[in-house]
Length: 478
Image (cartoon, rainbow, N blue to C red; front, top):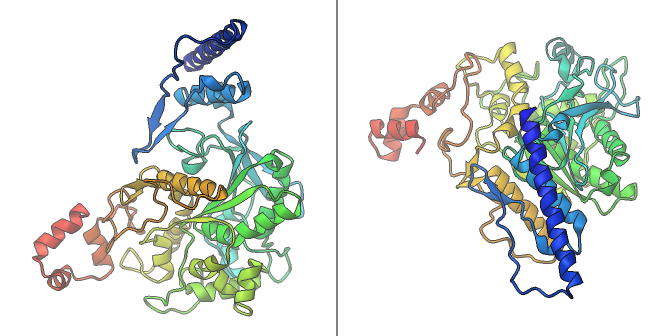
């Protein structure tokens, strides 16, 4: 209560400042507009993210005469950034909405839906697709339903969710998207957001991932999306792959519904999977052991999947290719920003590289499937070559704005294409640590390499250095 009262006092003070400034302008007009003293713009409060990027909310008093509404928006943004515990805190949680079209459902027939936090006045929208792997036949879908029901049913969804990472409404946690309209779509279709088939006796489940996205977009058009300037479709893991599969169809849907002016973009986190040959080949009995290509080949038939038309045309008869980033990306027309860990735990697992020294057990597989929601939660901390992820995303956003103005030169000091020169995990100390899937304990580089079967002594010889020096380098992450 005290914090809210403080926030209200701040807002009252700012409003008083507005009225005082308006009075000054009115007096100047009354005096014929003479201004013997040069006008000064007050210094703007700033805050910094951990990557030393600066986001500011400048108060441009010179614009008040022409655009009071814009000025008031600046005042509101400043008040909220300085005092996150303001009255708007009551609206921080995203609220559950079920789809208007009740025929589009989760795997078990329960209604699909989404969580939403409205940001009135903002024309930017962020739709986030949850991840959580997939199942590709009746047996492993039954097992998934027994052990991970929240990924197949809405029966126990809470009424509200609190956004974190890129869905956070706090500017210190989410510097460039905190004030957007936030939408979170829970993953309950188990089909990498690609399915378009109703429940049948053969499948036992509905697979409607692509239809869920389309219906959410249609519903949002009645809630303000029709006035949007930018729509960012984001997702992690299976949700990241879902972005690659759905960003163009969403753009085409909006255009077909009469909204071609909405700029649709994609942010794919940890969804750029590779169709590698497995480190150790195994039979395709379940989701854990099955090679990625074989699992997707079986899945797209079981799910009744749809893939982007340009990618489908490029891979007729082999549409499974469209689930792998480097194959689908050339056919995507919408701008897409890709974030991918060089040592992605889910990718290592499907390649049969296990971080335990023994086969993955059921509990460990649940751990892998639950990795997705946490990925973008680290995004303030992660840096590549000194650039934080929020900073890189902001630079990408700026480059798209400049391109729309026919300015092809990238903004100065604003990199958007960065790749770590990283020969092993933990050589970038800003990345989250890898954990042993069996014990849950954090693993240092040496432990990881031992699990992978590397001989540190032999590695040192190959590098022409003393083993103890190499161990020191590995331990420090240098």
